[in-house]
Image 1 (tube, helix red, strand yellow):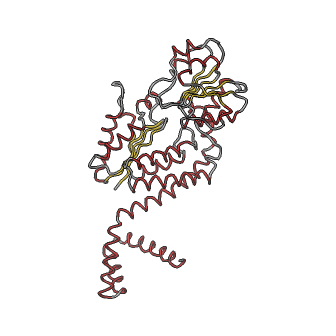
Image 2 (cartoon, helix red, strand yellow):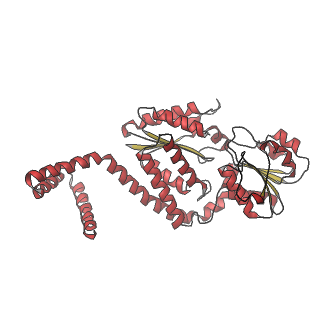
Image 3 (spheres, helix red, strand yellow):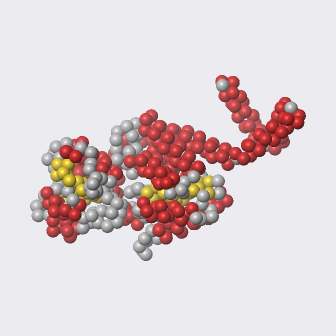
Length: 397
């Protein structure tokens, strides 16, 4: 059995392309259930974030090529790619150990645009839970995700990779400061503040203090510390734009939350203001960058701002890789044991029957003789060294 992975990420595609690969929660569920109906796919999970779409699949090793083909074909049926875009050009395929290693790196933040960022671990957990809830994740992928999450937590506690809280939200604050110079007494609008990313953005700007925060939230939903922000109905977002210095949008909307024509009509005062788009697909029409004194940032623009953070954390990345490798080895051992579990059970039964007939001593002698005859000298040497280590463990117990 083997784990396979199909990936599209910030490393292979820019924002305009990644937007074409965005799947809503409902489409993710439909896609996973469609994969499960295939004769070659036994388990699957989808990890969808602003920087990646990844499909983890489990099936028989003998069906590896068929698995990739089925998953890719179905994926393009659930996407709405423009005719001019060859989606296959942006796909990356991983199998076996490489797929497992990739998941561990993703969960720990090593593969993120912002190295060590906080949000990805929660997103990996969400992907695991969603796949479990819709009956598409079984023992193998669930165990793999659990090991990856545990390893990522170990990285967070034992290294400085995530010691300083960094995320797209914190970089959004930095981008706003970079453009405006200072956020003191600035008016900040967060569109979609009740979503996961929007809520994190709200908290980061609230921590700045001496700012006035305005937020659109879902009906009957309120943010923490209600006294530190002013609530604005979503339908009235354009009415408040002229007053704002920083406008951030982070929704799951399939269409623009701000279009350039309506923004232009809403703005009466010419002053420096910055638009920050944290959504995939985009929320804000990027043509707002052409308005007088307006700045504009999207997810891909954060790569430059994240560069300094990533350089500082390269040393910690080595320590993180050692931790991940240890957990990955433990998972791969579990996989091998699961693969041969029925054989182990049958061997135990055979030895038990021989022991009843001829005694345990003769039964074990026959077992070791059979091992010797089946192995090459190098294999036998390796087995005996392993057996020595097993004996040492038994002695300690």
